[in-house]
Figure 1 (cartoon, rainbow, N blue to C red):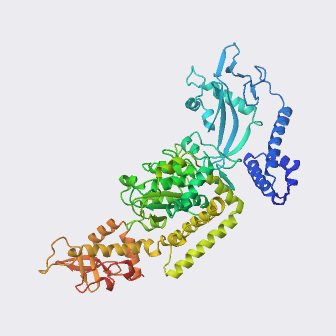
Figure 2: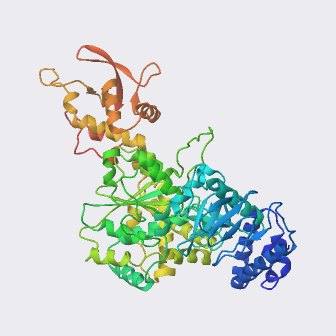
Figure 3: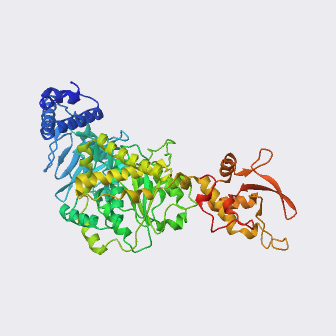
Length: 636
């Protein structure tokens, strides 16, 4: 075959091309080759013709293979074909009698061997793109209606596993008197006798990108876990009237409220993270209750899926393992958690652990009964959350703060009638997601990167003008959000209403705000300031409460145990802080240590000797709480 990139609209439809494809023995390679050819046909404007040729070629090839294959004669019986009434072609079934009355055969003495009370057969083999493992699609008929299910291959090869098919409505009974053993043999026979006729399909158990295809909008790669994750799978779809959804959203976009558009930009941006090799990040809106945070996050969800209760949006009470599983399935689609405050019972006021997990892009390694490792759960998406206060706190670890874009909501309610909005978006949803993917594929990722680089350059220039250095882990997510917003505005809504760049820029945290050690320095000085009576004796030279240390000559001496308690309250590493402060010249040590001896109340004790910025000490030697702020610290 000539190079695919050199194929023309005529040559791609020639017989030689498909002949070479279908001569490949490797089914995965064959499927990927067909995907690449389909993309080329789309570029040449002949995708419909090419897909029709592929369909026709598969049909003719199957007829040829069937005619040329030598007859397999069972020594105990005549070779037979299935006789099921319905949409499925006949298949070779050996000595099994397979019709609408059930599936059975007979032993040498004429005794009946029952495999199933109703029609059932394998109709498709699925090879998972992530694991390479095989699944099988079974079709079965009960009550006069055909149904299809996709299951792991191991469920039909062992009698103890095949009985689980009863959960799907298939009549299978275990034990010596049941039909489970016979059903295993029947399905194995019919699959092996028809191995060349049963369609093979590349599949995935994750939404999002597989090469240039996006699940669930690809016709060439199918989702193979709808039975395990039925609720999530069924929620991601197009439903209702697109014009009605679009009319509502355009009306909301014309309002002066920025919050719904911020959420929508984050929702669209989720599918851009993987092409940009970005780690996940969290987009959080915060304000007191009753302003419309939930309705706004439901609008962002309706881009892809059903935003109704117990559908796509995640239960905030979910355990970390459940969140890992959900994120693994969603993959590149956004994870939506409404009202993160409900997790306070588990995480308190510091959500660092859950933030690291969600933004790490990978679940914990877990072993199996064979002492091997299960497949790692992975994802690359945006997490949409809301809470009643900023998610990033002063005591949160710097790595966690880096991964959060916090937006404060404006005063007043976002929507005039939130219930009316909910009623419309729960009956009409899922259209904008496909439109956005189509737009990305139409303009190409090279152009998308150009848009993102323009925004990133604009952000960095604004930071330079402001004299503030912004964190790259903050600027990159914002540039991708602004990119997604521009594409959605230009190609979907076409209303010229873009996110306010200045307001978005102002939410970015500076390197000083994110630096854990700099924030630790601020926290320690503030703790000293509000506990001044523990550092200064009264007029009689006595301490009224416990002693934490003393303040002398522009330094605060903090007893080691008191220092450790402050570090614990501030949620930072004292050892790491002292190492950093020593390099910055903010502490005085002795004999190579980061502490020095100091006599307090008659006892000689080891203390941390920390420098106090001159601006923060009043005329009496006290640290002033009112004057204490970040701009006065020496590292600025």
